[in-house]
Amino acid sequence: MKLRLDLRLSQKLIMTPQLQQAIKLLQLSRLELQQTLAQHLDENPMLEEVETDTEEGDAIGSEEWNRDKQEMAPTGSGEAGETQAEGSENAEELSAAGWEDYFDSDRRVGDAEYPPSSQDEFPSYEQTVAKQTSLQDHLLWQLALCGFTELEKSIGRIIIGNLDDDGYLRTPLSEIAADAGSSVEDAESVLKQIQTFDPTGVGARDLVECLLIQLEFLDRNPIGRAGNRSGALKGSLLESIVANHLKDLERKHYGRIAKALGVTAEEVFQAAGVIEGLEPKPGRPFFAADNHVIVPDVFVVKNEGDWVVLLNDDGLPRMRISPYYKKLMGGDKGHTDETKAYLDEKLRAAQWVIRSIEQRNKTIIKVVGSIVKFQQQFFEKGVQYLKPLVLKQVAEDIGMHESTISRVTANKYMYCPQGMLELKFFFNTGIQRVDQTADMLSSVTVKEMIRKMVAEEDSRRPLKDEEIAAKLRNGNIIIARRTVAKYRSEESIPSASQRKRFF
Image 1 (cartoon, rainbow, N blue to C red):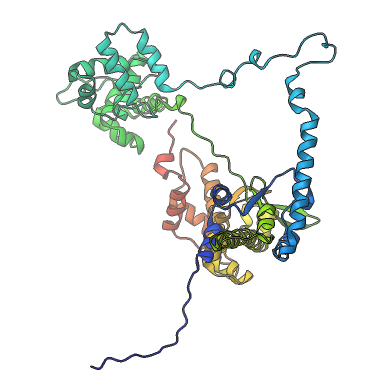
Image 2: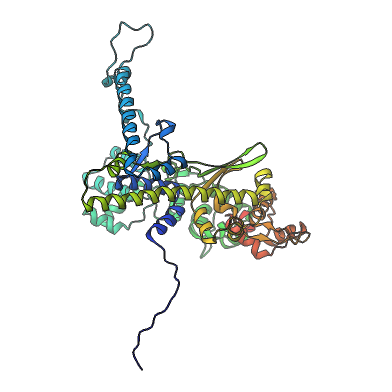
């Protein structure tokens, strides 16, 4: 083989750092975008946030952006000086207004003879905020009322601290005893005492123990006995079912339970009614789930008969090139090469961020507008008229790639007359119809039909998956039983045997 040098021409698609930044901004959620823009404002001195009370002439817009690009010449320093002058005048007006004196005064009409109130007289913020009692605080309060020794209280605090949100103790007692420096028997004794605390069932190590504690607390007569023959289960019928037949009870196999315990099916029905009234998660009333507020990225409203897409930019910082640094770069003062290179780099980065945000907003409006066009019947009439839609259809409609549509619709929400919806909600598969082969039915619509059938069924004879599929086929919808089972599982609808009610 001979070694030689060849020249070859080739074309490659290389993603520049600026393009990577634009793609990253496109797929960010609203909260992530706020954090990213705040980070850019902190790191880039060229970027400046336009305050909400700034005059319209100072607001960022396309006209100002074009004007900024033209005013980067040395002659563009006049406007920056005017802007600073206007800012100083506004500051003097605010100072002259005497806002501090105004807010410090607490006088009412007719109370001129009383001096203004001091801020020390008002309650603090912590005193005005209501705090919900946690499960640990509730149990520690009861622990302090018990006549425990210091060692037992120490064990009790460790046990209470290891309870999960449902009120269960998942940590082995051997570890708790080792942490407290006591024996396992002492830890077991303290745990038994804590299991008598309110809420009933707290401190249990599994579901069976939790339900047995609550049955013991009920202190009611047994519904039936298992019998005294050899090999029969001892104790009340309720305790026997909880201890040995919870799986059968979940599947509504009442006949199997009655046969195993030697009782009638009616007694099992009555016992099941009592067990269903127990609380499997004792800590539930004390658990406060965090409610995350979803802020929509776009609004879809009807204006003069047409659906209009409005971008929600409330809460997002509005950025522009800093007038001070524009003046600094446009001046004739001598700057070192390092200073010029630094300012040029930050200027290009600031320009690219502003352009990327503008391009992001335009792309979102484009994509949502295409979705509204495809799903117009949904916005007019409801979820029954939701059509099957895939990313490729929207991409072809607006002339973009499918990956771009996927990034735009990720973690973004729309507010419309149908409620708050994720953009991914509108993309779903289709179900073939017999009467209209060209017009497919959305899988979301089929799921809604299944949910409605289950809600209207007879609880004593719930519909099986095959029966639901037959009803849908009678409505000219081609669907298999396995597809019905899949949709039912996705909607968290139990099976027919689990939905059956005997009383």
